[in-house]
Image 1 (spheres, rainbow, N blue to C red):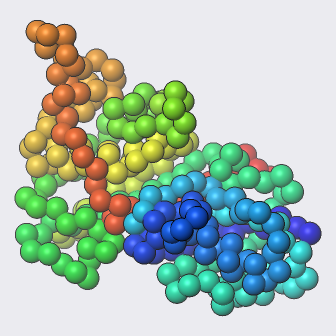
Image 2 (cartoon, one colour; image 1 turned 60 degrees about the vertical axis):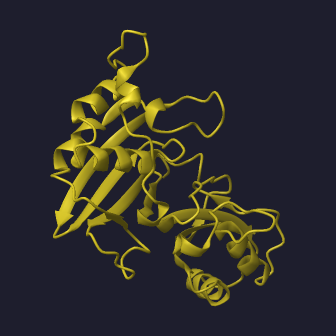
Length: 257
């Protein structure tokens, strides 16, 4: 019996999320079905993190215990033969017996894609957010986020009352024609944090909020109105970027030998 670590890719459009649910199609549920066809008899597989309904992954990490008498390549091929077409195992390796993908992770990296076009594009909108009116240069906005900050205004903790402080290690916008790509790496993320960050940056790019307001809110020093209400937070548009543009790209385990 060994503990195996896999890198999993999936098109999230037809999943209600990654975590198993009793009556809905999920990434974890489909992976466990495939494993059972290989003789797996455990209760659960472990995932590096949850992804929302409609969110994609090219680097999700999962772990499970299995009595497998063949090669790692054979295990990858056997899993892929039993997984649905919108999922694939990219890599398999043997992990430490106590490896937990979620708790052992040192950072995660996400990518968000959007494009600016006034007419819908069915071939792109499955994997990107169509934005209109177009945005101005988003590149400078990425400089707001790196460092350790309280991101309470941009997400919620996985558990009620949990810390909302996260350390962003890297953030960058890149532009190619009418497409923009946002990449962000952090030690951990709040629930829906990336989609919220993308939304407010697009709002800034469209002139609906000032970049300085985002900075003040992040630093916990929004302007106060005459009634004592936080004007900074109130002036940040509420909303989330669609899940379709978001992909979990990589989970790192820098502390593991």
